Image (cartoon, rainbow, N blue to C red; front, side):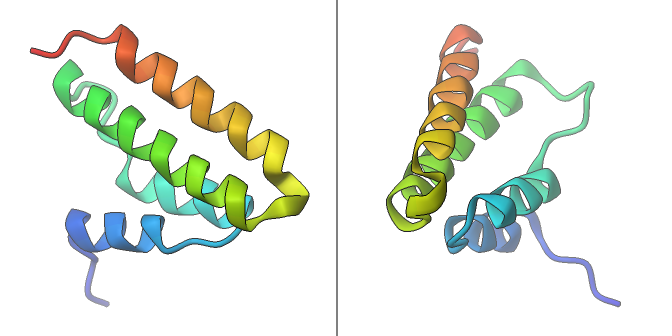
Length: 82
């Protein structure tokens, strides 16, 4: 079985339509625990955008998706830029 490239996995993450699928897709692009903080920053900020988009689509989970978007954005912004 062919494994997806990270860029393809991010495309898939941005294409999700439900909160459940967002959680699953973002787990596939999450950096390794020992990855550079700059990689974690990018991950958190991108995942915040995925959750923000999901909040507008998955209206049954609107507030929960907004919570996740805020949480991820705050975690990303707290990390150093370099």
